[in-house]
Every structure is written in structure tokens, then in C-alpha cells.
Image (cartoon, rainbow, N blue to C red; front, top):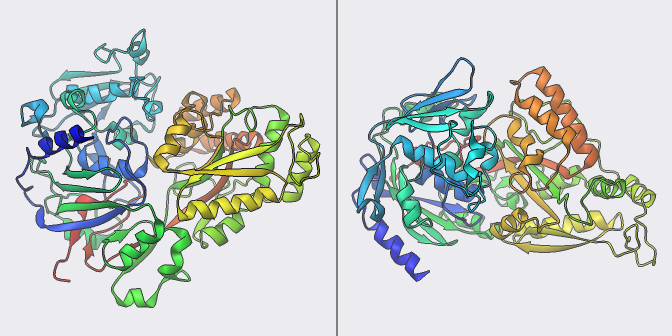
Length: 577
């Protein structure tokens, strides 16, 4: 750790000049409600770390900040990629003058980004040593990508699916058309890294983004400063959802704020109190169990409104669910008793109580994985797993999960003890959710114990298949239903498919839907997939969250984006407020 700190200090000392356009006298104070993990685009999957990555690194494309409906724009490229007539070949022309920040790996100087950097960054996801949670975005899609892992992984092995045509041009060739591939090119996971820096010190981030990491106390505090080598970037986005913000940004060089002081505060009450004490410039979201600290019904408390604080309720492109490990010997499998056990758990769950008690009414019931405003969402879909504890008890009785010894708890069909383990976050919300599930399963005679921990540890255990049950959330990487359904696709088991659900019938429907654009035909396939989800019950669908976002009166240009994790480069502070 001491060597890591020294290496970080050496790297950071190479870049001291202020970024043109950024006001170094201004510091944005923000909070991460979960600790960061690894600052590597190919490995990070939690929203806290992805927010850091999208400011330190750059993906080829990004979203237009204010455009609604959502729209992509060039970022590292001169324009959106050109697409061949057969819709399989993408040609990306990179901008000149994009530079990685100074690093010892470059002799202490900046280094220009070239086409081979993007090729390298894409191929890294196939390295089995990284266990990239984003490999599902690419695997089997790029022509010849299986060759990368033919024998020992070789990142230098050329493949037709991604190659540099010259220093500024990258060609990507897909096996078949992918209606969402442009969205993938805008994800933080596809951010570009420099091979020399990765090989020299993979733990230290070296990117081309608007900010550089200046200080780093892991899972405690980070300080970002405007990147002095950031390419000239003038806001030219759409007027879109907020003409006033567009007018304030028009023609200005980004980023605007010189420093971002980031604190990691995992205790939820401390986050809210930090905002109320004016130590934090905005908070998204206010944890639902603590909504009463800022809300009076569905309105901001009058005392806070008098202080000039602003609040908005934001329907997120997000699904909250409980997944169950289909490889677990107690709760997994596709035999009828195992299916009955999982369906009984779903029948013991009350969405109405969850929304009323734990979400303070700020959520919508989830009847399919797709939230509103995502392409493919169908409001007519309804769940077959409505709250019905009596039916849950009857189902368990029918398949041999009965209380044989009269202690009030059911045993397994073979007579052995039945105790489930649910992992959860060590937080205020986590404790409340443990109590909720404990009551729900006690009502149907199922004993459950809870194991709480940090998100980073839970995600690591889940990837290794060591978690039996875990509540999770999925925030849209892009605004299409495919991004949610892929969580159940068999080949994604162990990565995005944390339930390790494998069902050939489901996979065939998914693959057929992949080939279709947003259409009634695709929605019909999604309905069939939803029926299989309900029938085999690897998940309990919970809710689609409505986020409570609050901001201080001196913050300017804030508009929460449905997909992008942060808006830091666009924000400004009124220091005279």
C-alpha cells in the first residue's frame, strides 16, 4: 500500500497546470454512497466507480446531456461512426489532439491517443485474468473474437472484428447486426486506456477525460482536478429538456469546475445530514427510508424550500430485484420442488408493502424487468407472482417442504433442515430490508439468516457463485430492453447473469429478439420471456425506483441523466450565493 501511495503521488505530480476554462477556485463537494472498487473500465461494474471512470477516462461516444429522448454524440470520434449497408461494419475516425495525461509510462509526458489504444481497450475485456463483467457486451459479436482465447489469451493476436486501419481509424466488424452497438460504444466499460500505463501500474488510472485523480484514500476520499491536457471541448448539446441550462452552457469550455472533492459515506443518515448541513452540493438519491428528512408527503419540506434547496422526483431506468443462485443445491435447479420453493418465496413478497413502507411510496411495482421509458416496456404485462402467502404455504406443502418436528420451520423434502442465507448491504436500508424479508419468509415457515457486507465484497462473492440470494438493482446501461433481458441470458452466467439462470428456451427467444428492432414483434418475444421468468422464478421482481434528488441553491446546470452516472463536467457553482 505504501508503494501504491508513492506511485500515485509521482504520477499526480506530473500534471499541475490548471485546465483552460475550468475555475480552479471552485470545488464541487459530492458523496459516494458506496465505496469505489477498481478504477479500470474493464473491471468496474458498480455505479460509484463507473461515475469516476466516466470523468477520468473517455468512451468513443457519449450522450447529449440534455437531449430527451436520449441521443448519442461523438466524444473521442470526429462524428458518429459510419455504418455499412449490411449494418455489420462500424468505422470510427478518432479526433486529433486527444492526449493521455502525463505518466511515467510515457516518460513523464502526455501521450496522444491513437487507434491502437481503442483496439487494445476492447480486446482487454476478453482477458480471462480480468474477469471482465462487461465481456457479455462483446463476446461472440466481433468477427473472429474466439481466436483471442484459442489456447492462451493473446491480446496481440489480430482479429477481423476490431482493428486499426491507420492511426486515426478503427474498424469494428460484427457477426450480425446489433441495434444497440452504438449505445455500447458510449458505456464507461468501453473507455480507452493506454497499454503502457496498464502494464506499468494497473491500479492507477491514466485517461483522457476531463478530470484527473489528484488524491486517493481508498473508500474514504478522492480529489479530482480538471485535466490540463483535456482537449478543447465547448458545449454544443441540444436545448432538449432544459432550455435554461442549455443557454447557460452554450459556448462554454468544459469542464467548468476546477476540483471535485468526493467523500465516501456509506452510512445513509450521515449522507443526508451532510447535505442538510451544506457540506454536500447535491445528493442523488436521498435514501428512501430517510425520505422524511427532506419530504413532506411528495413535496420538499417548506423549511428546506425557504433555504433555496431544490428537489425533483426522477423515475429511474432501473429495476430492483432479488436473485437466487440457480446452481445452489438448496434453492437452485429446475426440478419441480426447487421451482416451487422459489415461487413460494415470490408469493411471500408484497410489492405494495415494500413500496409503502420501505420506499415511502417512491417506486413503481415491477411486473417485468423493463422499467418505463425503456424501449420494449409493456405496461400491460402483469406478474403471476402476486402477494399470496396462503398459496405459497400450499405450494410448499404440495412439494414436501413441511414442518416435521413441530418447531414452526419447514424442512426440505428429504427431511433435512431448510435454512436460507440472504446476503445484504451493511447499511440502514440493508438492515430494514433484512427485517422485511425475515417477516415475509417467517409468514410461510421458511427460516432465513442474513449475512451483511460491503457491496464490493458481495459482488466478488456473487461472481464466484458463493451467494445464495441477494437483492440487486440494475440501472440501464442504454435505454433498450435488451440491456435488462441479458441479465437472464445463459451465456452471461457468472457475469451479468448473477442468478446463473440457463434455459435453452429462454436463450432462443433472447437471440431472436436481439435480431429485431424495437417493434410489436420483439415485444411479443419479450412477453414470452417474461412468462418463462415467472415460471422458473430465478428472480423475485420488486420495483422500479423513483429517485429523490436534492441540490443546494448555489449549484448550477444540474439535470439528472437517465443513463450517464454523473454530470460533473457540466456543473457550475454560484460563489456569490
